[in-house]
Image 1 (cartoon, rainbow, N blue to C red):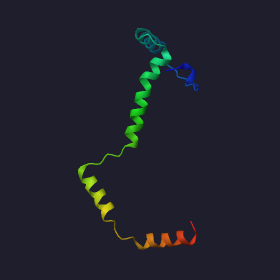
Image 2 (cartoon, one colour):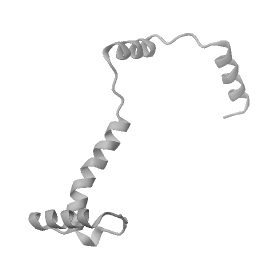
Image 3 (cartoon, rainbow, N blue to C red):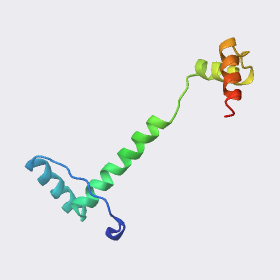
Image 4 (cartoon, rainbow, N blue to C red):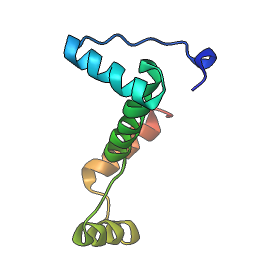
Length: 91
């Protein structure tokens, strides 16, 4: 990672043993502590975001969802009233 592209900082507190362990690992990899941490944390962050943003449905859930899309139920009176109010507001 190019240092020139970095503009943000994150501060972290850790034990002395944790810091030494990370420094040793970075040294063994031939990289800086910053690069070592970023290379470990970035994939975890990306995977966490993917997990939370992906909707996974089981077979029965998928069937119900597709059925509702293909054959939507008739709007209820409450929904019709809300749509009429919305239309009156000019939105």
